Image (tube, rainbow, N blue to C red; front, side):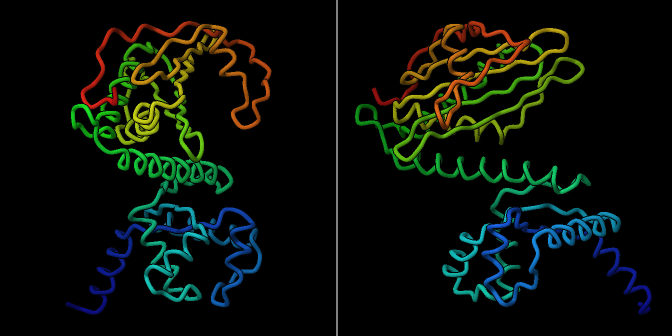
Length: 297
């Protein structure tokens, strides 16, 4: 095969290769990385501009690129576990490859980084919450009465409840938020589901599993929690309703209770002014059911 043909084939293969860029999204993380002599950047704004230029160049070549969140503390832990020198470009490359395989990533779609970064931070937070909730469920053990795995049974129950809520939500775009108290903190998870032009909801199974995992921690540990839905439809007021988690069941909130839940700041507990064009209503009936097998009675 001629040299020119080999070069052309290599160029074609180069375009087929997907890549991941681990991004230092805030000034504090960027400053932490400047302690390494092999880290060549000294200005965060210029660094982000160079990343954006690189992303545009890769896209113009027909390359697919995803973005991951570079956390200096996680990077240091990774290097310690793997026996790597953190002050080396190769180590940062190894860490980025690990993020691409196991971390939260989003595809670069041409939008400015200022618009992509919030989505990336949300994806990373969602994955961290899911990992923590999964660890909690795995450590609960089995039911002393029936021997069933409590974590798995609670997850199955949570999936059933979430699907019931979605099935009864009706047409529109639905924003769901669930909470579950844990020994360390209150876990929060959000899920967005929208109908297409034919009124069919397209469900992201991985997003539903992550959402249900947080709800399952409340079911398994029998702690406080709840689920609130906001439904948006053109031309009519938004509808907000919800349930309180009690053991293995979702108990309906009254209009006043869902108003209080929706108009209270989660972190400070302060009241938030109600929005105009929003109705706080009773939730739909989820139907009768029995406690799932393996539930800690």
